[in-house]
Each structure stands twice: as structure tokens, then as C-alpha cells.
Length: 296
Image 1 (cartoon, rainbow, N blue to C red):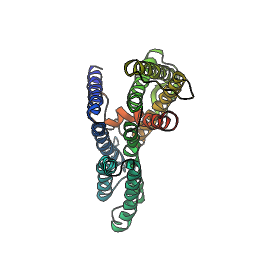
Image 2: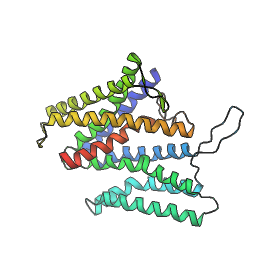
Image 3: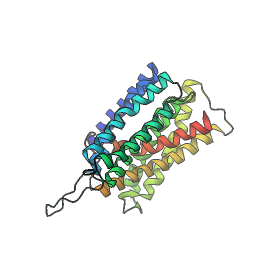
Image 4: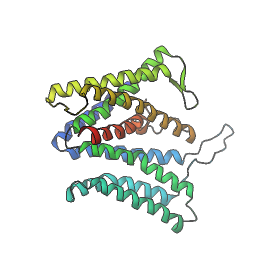
């Protein structure tokens, strides 16, 4: 528990540091997203190519094995993702999203080409695994880049993304441990309870409203849309908390189907980067869409 707590404090410190760096220039926040993309991609490729060992010492087949060329293509895509976005924004302002769509299109074509040019080693399963590794986490992380570049309320959007998710996740664990009760999805994640899910939703919703109050208090900026801002923040917090817990279940099923305990070992007590940001990824998509269509 001490190791988990210490790692959590360090993680929060790093996130906070990048929030201060983005005050110098918004692009500095892209470094954090770039790190998430590269490390998360490595963890996904590792998981899909992991071969679980049985009690008899027999190695089971990997779930979605990729050839070397497919793995390299996935890593090249992740390595180009953030630089391509910012280069497009620098030379063709406002075209970063289009550049990322074109990059993913080019990557998808490359994966199909490899089925021909490297047909002896590649497989359809590997191509499917590569496309999934490209979308989760890198494709979903694009919404953090977009939220960071929102014309207004970009700081609030990012705060909601990085606060609601860990609050909902933490209090789901705390409430579930104290209250216990019926399991939420025993076949996917046997330790999650309905009481924990409700606790996470309640505290995640409260965190959203509290965060908005602190934001308006410190910046003087108020949302003046057609919907009451407090109601809007409560709705965002409610749905984002649900989405966070769903994202955690997605990560759990990936680990269960690939036969691994944790996605990595980078964060002692937590696992890998994806073990830490699984819910945050889904929250990021939801929060960005809310701001892009209803707030900004």
C-alpha cells in the first residue's frame, strides 16, 4: 500500500508539473501525451504477443501475435503521432486533426501492404492487433491534444480529465473495500463491487462540481451557455465517472484475455501506464466531445 501511495504521489506531481509547463507554452503538455503514447503502445504490443505458461510448463499461443514488421509499423505510428500534429498546427494552423486522420489512414494502408510484402510472417490477426494498438491508446490520446488546444476552457477541460477519473477510481476502490456487497462484473473484474461503482460515481460527480467552483474562483471565468453551469458540470462528472469505470473494465478484459496480471511494471503498486490511465483515456474522449460541441 505504501508503494502504491508513493507512486501515486509521484504521478500526481508529474502531471501537476506539466500543467505548470503548459503555462509557458501549450505544446509542452504534448510531451506528457507523447510519453503516454509511446509507453502505452509498448505495453499493448507486449500484451498481445505475450505467451502464458501453463502449470505444465507449456507456452500457450499469443492472443494477437504480430510480426516484426507489424510491430515496427505500430511503433513508427506512435512515434510520429504527436510530432505530426504539432507540425501541422505550426505550418497549417487548425489542421492538426486532419493530419492525424491522414496519418492513421496511411498506417492502415501500410498494415494491409505488409500482408502482401511480408506475407510469410504477417497474419490478419497481427494486422488487427496492430490497428487496435494504434487506436488504444494513441488514437484516444488525440482527444487530450485537442482539449489542450481548445480556444477557451482548455485548462478546465484538462483538469476535469485528470481529476474526475482518478477520484472516481480511488473512491470506487475505497467504498467497495468498506461496504463490499454484490460484484459488478465478476467474470471480468472479480474485485469490483456495485457499491464501489456507486461510490466512484458520487465522488467523481462531486469532484467535477468542486473543480468548476475552484476554477471560477481562481480565474474569474464562468461558463455562460444555455445550460446551468453547475448542472452541466454535474452531468459531465456523472457520465465521466461511469465512463472511467467502463474504461477500467476494458483494461481488465484485455489483461484477462491476454493472460497478464499488469500491463507493465513502470509504476510500482499500480502496474503499467495503461493500468493508470485506462479510465482517463475514455474520460478524455467524453470530456473533449462535451467541450467541443456544448461548451466552447
